[in-house]
Length: 105
Image (tube, rainbow, N blue to C red; front, side):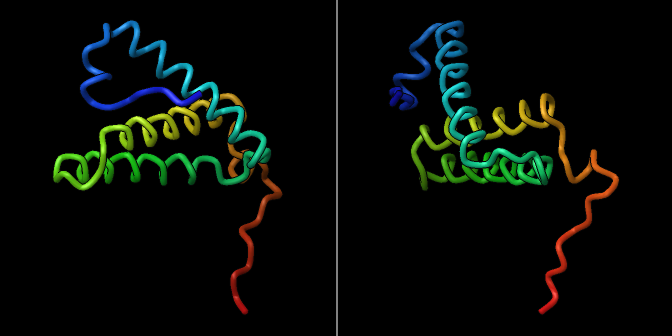
């Protein structure tokens, strides 16, 4: 579902409507994320990465370098990863047998 998330369109809505819209975006992105990345390995790392991307989007928006909808997209991804960590855990942390991949060539 493509929802209109321009700043003007977003902030003229009631807070409850914004909440509902955000929940819809998170639900849809969560389904896509689980299909694309079914494993919870390194999900905490992915969450931290998404938080950094949200911070970057906020700074870029303030500087006029991106649209407001980019903030919503990044916030959605943060929410998705936070939910996945809460619900699925992180296999790289939860699994005592997990070992980091060897990146040496």
